[in-house]
Length: 80
Image 1 (cartoon, helix red, strand yellow):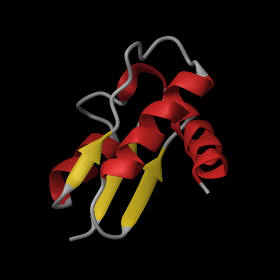
Image 2 (cartoon, rainbow, N blue to C red; image 1 turned 45 degrees about the horizontal axis):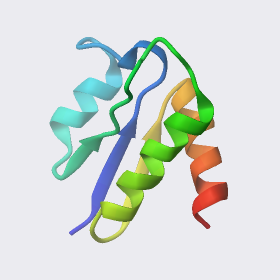
Image 3 (cartoon, rainbow, N blue to C red; image 1 turned 120 degrees about the horizontal axis):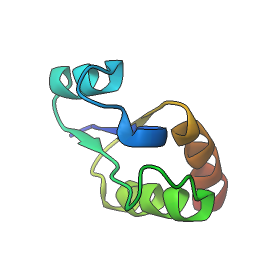
Image 4 (cartoon, rainbow, N blue to C red; image 1 turned 180 degrees about the horizontal axis):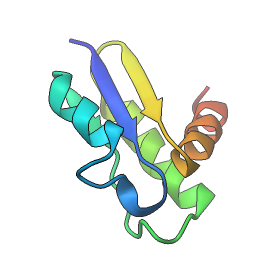
């Protein structure tokens, strides 16, 4: 099983955003949720992504947008 992790940016990429559409199209897709979508805290956001990476089965594809891109790069650096 492969997993796609959706990593939104500020404000969580609402219902009309391309990431929300993609999440509905791709099987086994997981949205990485943040505690506060309005507070771009890089250590916290990347920690949430690292947790999801460690849980995800199979090959993982990360699809990030906006501040989620920064969190993804930080998580990749930390995750190794």
